[in-house]
Image (cartoon, rainbow, N blue to C red; front, side, top):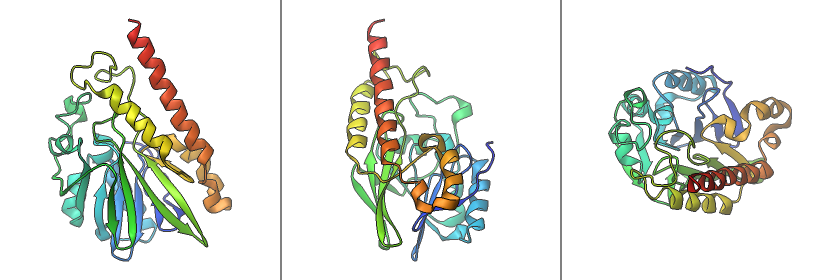
Length: 262
């Protein structure tokens, strides 16, 4: 279990409610709220506490989304649905993984990575719009970390300005971990083409506010103290987003060349 992190407003109706490692975001609407990621059975307690600390109700959660179908992002999804009645929306490619409780993952299928299976209420497809009231998120399929890894984009308004938000699902494969081999991967033979597609998608997304499935992706711990005085300006980081995607793509190409020489 990771230490909690202060829940906070990012911009407009978008809030951070995760812990110090596993990011979770709450999008508030008059029709109920959208929760992006919930973590495992340890983190859900913190997520619930953080939502309450911000003055919102756990039972107002209407939609649950996931960046990637690993235990540290969807491990408590079944509990969310049971307690709130929320609908669980998952990208195609990750549905079997979620509904098997992690048993059908191509890399992290050991018992320690498994979690209570969760029923998927709606299967998302690349580019599909998720809407609750007037709030819209676009689900972009960015596979490679999981087959249905998902990057969400939306617009938020702060004052008189509108900002493009990108919540990165993952920066790519966990190179060095079993199951993430790029060359000769018999379990996930299309991993290379999937990752190349994902980087192309990520490069194409307009980004003002850079967020991600883990706080370390976008410098949560460095930016949060600044937000106390700078407000939304602390989270505006198009250069950081570009550097992150460029860096992850470079790591991928270097790993691919390394494996091809073996």
